[in-house]
Length: 501
Image (cartoon, rainbow, N blue to C red; front, side):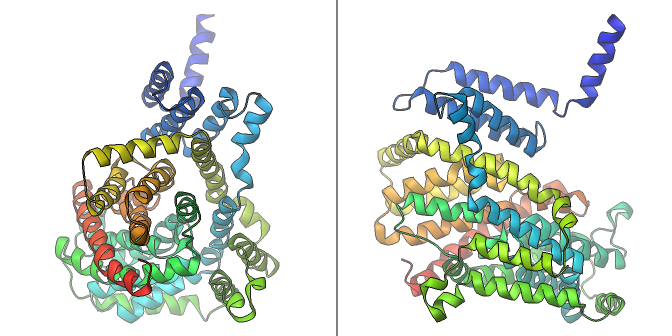
C-alpha cells in the first residue's frame, strides 16, 4: 500500500500541470478574499466575482498553469459559485456567454487569416525586401524591420505572431550572418540592437491599428461603455488618429536604441547580399502570395468601410463579417486548408482565455463592481483636489506602468481599462474626453515595452539571448516614457487638427 501511494503521489507530482508554490499562493489569496466581508457599497455576489477575477489575474501573473487552463478554471468557479444566477444552468450560461461575442471571433479569425503570411512565405518576403532595400548599415536594417512590422500590423492581430513568429526569425538570420550569436558571446555585434528594434517596433505598431493586437477591439468596446456610446472609435478613426504619432514613434525608436544600445558593427553591406540571395532562392512571387495580397487588400477596403463611403450605409459590414470573408477566401482558394485552421493552437487558445477574461469583465460590470471601483477612484482623486489635467495624467500613467504586474496585455486591459476610462470620463470635461481616451488606448499598447514578460512577443525575443534582463528593463522604461511623450505631444496636436478634442 505505501508503494502504491508513493507511486500515485509521484504520478501526480509529474502529471499535474500547475506549479505548486504559485498554486498555493493563489488558493490562499482566493480564500482570504472570500473570508473578508464585502466592502461598503458592493453586494456579496459582486465581491465574490471580484475575488474570482483578481485570483485569475494573480494566477496569470504567477504563471500557475497555462493561461488556457486557468481560463477553464475561472469558468468552472464562476459556474459553481452561482454569483451571476441563482441556479447552475443560468450560471454556466453566463460563464460561457462571451463565446458568442463577435469581438472574440474577430480576434480568432484574424489570427487564422495571418496563417497565410507564414504558409505562403509572404511575410518573410516582405521582410527580406526591406532588408535588401535598407540593409547597408545596421541602422538601415533596423528600419527595414520597422517597416516590415508596419506593413504587417493591420493584418496580424496577433502581435506575437507578427513580431515573434514572422519578423524575429528574419532578424536572427541576419544577426547570424554577421556571426552575432549569444552562444559565442558576440551578440553585441548587431544582434542586441536588432533584437531591441525587433521588439520595440511591436508595441508601437500594436497601437496604430485596431487589428494589430488582440486587446484593441476590447478597448473599443470599453470606450463605448464608458462614454455611454457618445464616443465610438472605428477601424478608420483609430488608424487615422494613431498613424501620425505612431509613424513618428517608429522613426524615432531605432535612433534612440542606437544611442542606448549601439551595435559594434555600424556598416553591414553583406546584409543586402544576404537578403537578395534569400529572395532569389524564394523565386518569383507565387500565386498563393498574390492571393494573400489580394485578400489583404480586400480586408483593408472592407475594414476601412470604403464600400459604404461609395454606395451608402447599406453596404457597411461588421468587422467580424469582414474577417469571415477573408478566412473563407483563403480556404476556398487553397491558400490555407482546414487542417491549418484546426492546427493553429494559438487561435483556439486565444478563444478560451480571452473569452473567459471578457466574460468576467462583463460580469463585474453587470454586478456593479466597475461602477463601485470607479466611484471610489473618483472620490480619491477629488479628495486629492487634483486638476482635471493632472487627474488625466495620473490615470494614464498609473494604468500604463501598472503593466509591471501583468504578463498579458489582454488581462491588464480586462482588469483595469473600463474602470479607468469611466473615472476619466467622470472627472474630465466632455470636450477633452477624446484626447484622454486616445492616450489610454495608446498606453494599452505602449505598456508592452516595459518587461520581458509584458506580452507574448517578449519572451520569444528575450529568450533568444541577445538582450540581458537589465538592459531589457532599462531600455523598456525609457522607450515607454518616450512613446507616451510622442503620443501626448505629437498625437495631441494631430488629434486637435482632426477635431477629436
